[in-house]
Image (cartoon, rainbow, N blue to C red; front, side, top):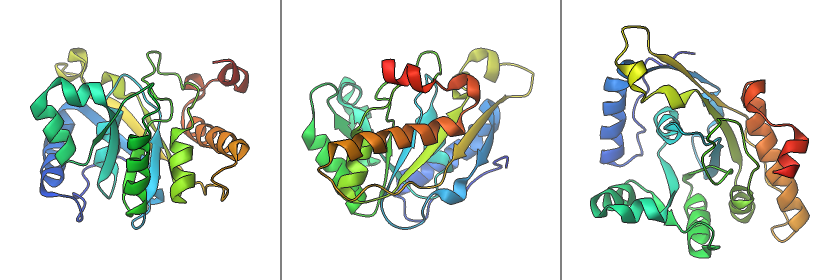
Length: 227
């Protein structure tokens, strides 16, 4: 369905609701948003909302379409680059992770967020794809879901890279069409210490995300294994 507008999540903090209303007001200037499968996002209980990660504002699209507030793990460099930006992000539920350092404090915080019954937003690729093609997944989202014993909800945002291009929002032509697809929740394995289950569940998550993407944005199994 094409999203005219969604109501701000009732349980969200006031600033999240205000941002949601702001996005509703300006969205027609930037894109036509088509959302499929929004009903797959649980209305209660913790879950891990996983998505592909392109050069566009996919996090913004996910936040807008979610019926509940989403808590994101954000790279520490971004939160530390500007004190006020860092405070703003923290106030709205974001928390820092130091990539490449095995930041277990951030991982434990993520698990705690899900155990509290919140939606945790994660990008399993770990970094943005410059080509838009889905990259090999890392095990962080699967690990959090298994430890918290919470479902993983796969999602894909398509064509968000064009949203903030001047050729789009300054054009007299219709705004770019952005599609967001949400898949059915995946149940994590029970054994939190089984490395094979962790790897297999990571593959399941990436396969579920890939299934939501058009063929040209997927990678073959061979490419994913070689990446």
